[in-house]
Image (cartoon, rainbow, N blue to C red; front, side):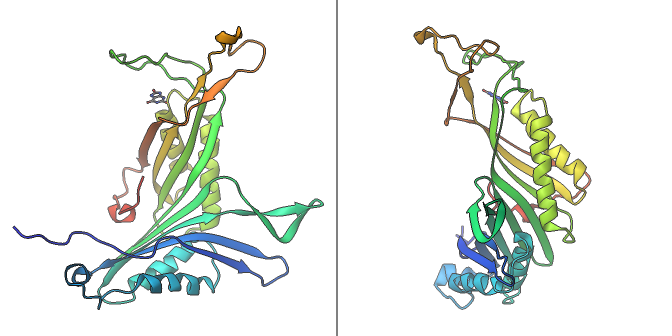
Length: 299
Ligand SMILES: O=c1[nH]c(=O)c2[nH]c(=O)[nH]c2[nH]1
């Protein structure tokens, strides 16, 4: 028996870089959280403390800032530029993974006019990109996280088996709420990254709204299916959707009913935990799997 080093990677996590385009009086900004990781022959560093192959994580951080100086047109483009550079940096580096979160900023409106250089953070979801260079292969995953959505009706849940511990009542009218994390894989690199990201996000939202849900599982599948039907560049969608349960609050102690169809507001208790966690992949069955695209990407 011998003990050996298994798969490993290392890099700088969560480099916070803000790039401002000041080329006109109307500034624009890109706000990213960038994590890089290198893969390759780093055995000696692990087993002997020999750092001759270790491109420092500090240099990886510096590379992020230096590359931002050329402008950032999209997280995907920036990730591709960085991952290709890092993967090509030394012959013992076989691959690089760059994962990016992108935070949105809206112009503040002053007197009805969008301001040139004042912004407020968009409250909602975060855009994500993961670029992996693996030898000659390049993979791009786009995505989003924390897209919080809710519908006040159009959701049922019934027909499930009842074992001795099943107490949940069946329902034909409930709130359906979740915070969508989705990542989707592109076939090629000739993609209009920003426009496609916007369009996929719209598809996810529209399908959540338009699907009469019999289960969050069904809604998840419908959302992934719609993305694949409407976006030819996308071959695979992975989603993670917590079921943010909303339970009708019992108000009988106060002599109040709480009837879905009665007069007055219907009052729910929004429970934060535990939550159902519905996860799944929807993909084209004629496209080869790309495990390298997803390696060390959680969820
Ligand atoms: O949409 C749902 N899927 C489930 O699997 C489930 N389980 C549960 O208790 N409520 C729900 N709702």
